Picture: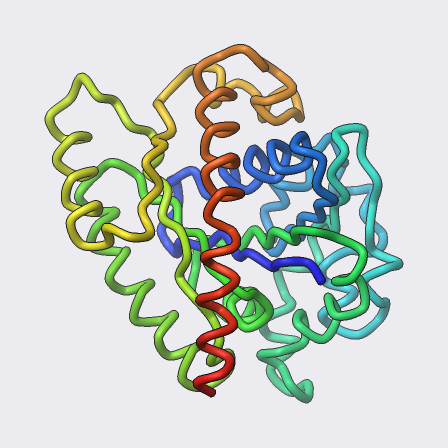
Length: 266
């Protein structure tokens, strides 16, 4: 059964989608079977894998509303990663799901149909704390939080941790915050080093040793509908994301044991 990882942060511009696309690409490059679910109405993960949003007839919206199952929504890509894409209809899904039964767990039930087909399923959550994000957090085993190197990011981090606590209490008791990844890190600036040290001090066991640098190539890659792994495979950004993927892979058994422990407690 696939390990399901939600990439979440309600603050925009922290490198969440960039992290989801590039980490999933790196994990797939390690030989794992990977599916990524675009839960963001902006659809940047979809286009990041070279899929036009207009071509997504069956995507995340359709499986949340119940018009299709997850297997129908899966799209194959040339990057070894399968994608359940987003289309413009997803923007209204939060409102449409309000009166549907099990509105918080609809994604979890949908992904159960394909979970055995993959080693990892990544969910790219929207930059908000709405019903879509709640579905992502209810569906996953663990959460990966990208943290940008600025002080506003630290303020939003506390709010996100509180929200995850509420999801653990009411919808997904085995949910684990397994990983934090420092993004847009510039070791030359005092601010980046201070934010990194602050996060590391507060969450020493879950912050990856790998940091993602602020590079032009990482920013350019989406404009070519590619991950930085495909766009600039030997660049600093690609190497950093591959190192992060390896670090996550090395930690995976420890994380799975922690998830099982939480399940047994509940």
